[in-house]
Length: 203
Image (tube, rainbow, N blue to C red; front, top):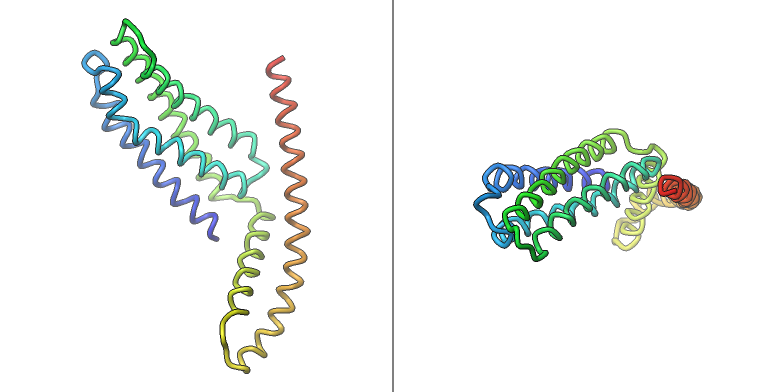
């Protein structure tokens, strides 16, 4: 399944970035010796890439496991918040530059911990995606394959065999549309529930 393979690939890349941030920055950089400017220059590319990759992973995770939408969004949001705080601290003007570097590294360390938890969540979704979503994606891939085959020149004998498959796929396409509508409605309901929970937490 393309979506699962895509999430697997992004998860591996994301974990690699977290490892590099841990070993090349957190393990080697001392806040007493590094200025905010130096810390920003050393970390900005990898940290920004990790933030962007987490956003991409979130979208796939929501697709594969919509019933975990609240957990996925919260985990990604917390990770992004720590990353944003890391950058904000480094870019603000301050007289106590040493304290700035220390505070920024604390945020980065927190982000790495949250990123590792996000990886575990991604792996759990890869291992156990929604069966209904998998069926929708499978039908969609079959439908796209049919569209491709319809444009390819093939012998009549092969075409005759594919005609029955074409009709079956048309039936599957209708089932796919109905399933997609059900999933969209389910996601809307989840969003409404999540909004109500956030309102309750903020009250």
